[in-house]
Structure formats: C-alpha cells, structure tokens
Image 1: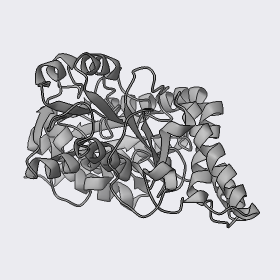
Image 2: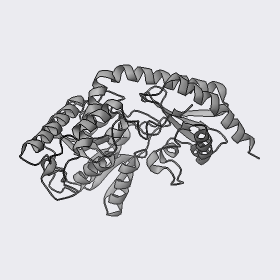
Image 3: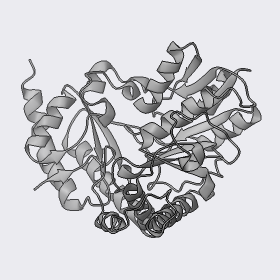
Image 4: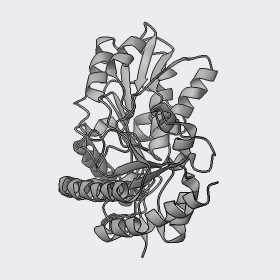
Length: 382
C-alpha cells in the first residue's frame, strides 16, 4: 500500500492531460510560422489561452504563458518595480511574511538593490489584516504582492479587501494564486487584481508551464529579450505541448472542481479528526474554516518533522515538512514562524495535502501507520 499526500508540492499527471499532450505532438510546427503545420499549433495555443482566460474571468489577450509560477511571480514583481514608465512612481513594495520563496526571494533581491520593502505580518491562523496593508501604504508604494492561498497551511487571504484598499491609493496588486486555482473559484474581476500567477503542475498538469494574467493596459518591463512572442512580453518559442496539457487541466476543472472539492474536503477532515483522536500533543495550523479543502498542517510535539517524513516514506507514505521549494535547506519555515510557532514546534510540523486521486483507503493507511511512527520517535527522546 502506498499513499501520496503531497499534492501541494506537485500533482500526478491526469490521464486526460497526458493524452492531450501526446496528441499535440502530432503538430510539430513553429507557432510563429505561416505555413499550415505552424498555423495549426498557433490555433491550439490561441484556443488554450481562451480556455484559461475564460476560467478566471479574463480576456485572452491578458494571458501570458510562462515556464511556471516562479517565472510568473518574477515577471510580475520585477516587471512592475523596474518599469519606470508606469504612471505610479515609487520604489516601495509591500508583501507578507508568508509568501512563497519565488516571491520573497525576488523581494529580497530588490531590497539589496535599494528598493524599499514592507513585510506585513499575519495572525496566528496565517491571515493578513487588510488594515495592516492600509497602514503600510506610502506615497511611493507601487506594488502589493499577497498570495491568494498559503502553500504550507492553506489559509485563504482576504484579497478583495486588500485590493479595495490598494485601488483607493492607486497601487498595483499581484497575487500568487497557484494554490487557489482548482480549489477555489477564481475570478480576476472580483477581487480585481492586476496580476495573477498560475502553474499547471499543481492542477494535474505538466511541469514547466504556467501563466501570468496581466490586466489590460498594464505594461510590464520584460525580463528577457529575443523575439515578439507573447506580444513581446515573454520571448521564446512557446511550449506548445505544455500549453496543450495546461488547457486540458482547465477543461477538467470546469466540469469537476465543485464535486472534487467536496470529496477532498471530506478526506482532509477524516485525516485531521483521525490524527487528533489517535495522537496526543498535536496542533493543527491554519484557519479552521478559511482554508482550502486539501491542506492539513500538523505540528507533533517533541518529534522532528524530518524524522517523521523519513519514517512515513519507509512505509510508502509521501508527505512534506513544508514548501517543497525550501526542502533540504535546513531553515525553519518562515510561514510557521510568522504564525507564532516556536522553532521546535515549527520543526515538528508535517504538511499533508490530498487531491484528486486520494481516497479513504490511503487516508486510513496513514492513520494506521502514523501513530506508531510518532510513538516510536517519542520513545527515543531522553
């Protein structure tokens, strides 16, 4: 028996997505070419762009394909902060203490260059107070970047309130929506963000393909140069096979997301209740209600999280100690520190994330093995 419970890190490739990608390989032409095989690929890319735009309430011309969320986040933040032609002048950027490394590391690099950064705190459940955003805005504030859903604890941010405050001050808003797409209904017109990052491999698609929504009329400074692809916003021949897979992900979500979310929520509750009932000294992190269906972050007192992970892996159970992008760094999770956990509790935390192909048997297998793992590890303590 095996149980994969790390869907927030990446998801298995859906068979329907795989088939769409294989079919796309039949048309090998360069989408920038004028002959038939190139035109066929261009039509497929245009159709995929329409599919994605429709899913988030955008226009097709507002979607730029990228290599994934990391590039999209970089494109958004650097594209705004380094574009001196924007009407709103300023070198001040606001973000939160719990952003993904692909946002925080960009912000830190800007800070080293002399840009001014404000890191807004979160409460014990990992949620930003919009009034803290309001108090952080200055005359020279150009951009606010706040993730829609936290990747470690699943808490949902009050984006609509944040955007409302930003618009009063004429400040651009970017959101990393990677953990929201496919789990929540996302419509860019409400809350009204200006920039939104997405990634296919979090929604049962291939790695290496993502997208950035850029509100019509907003100009970004390009990060790279070399061609007029994506209307000059991101040069390079498009990853047509990845784009075909991304579009199929969206088609599947359109038909199945509501029912799927209910199923995933029930599985998470089954896992959460089982852990609380069978293991002493545990803490569930994140808001009890304002979180996405599949994410469960649990701190196990007096046990090292990495030891738990390795013990579970030895019996075929895959989980995470936090963000996969920080795995192996040895650093304490900034997210868990931000919500007030001690270093020991932060290091004792496991993130379980369930998804489309999870079932009750897998959850029950985890609940069968986990108490013994925790008990044996605690028995090794002095």
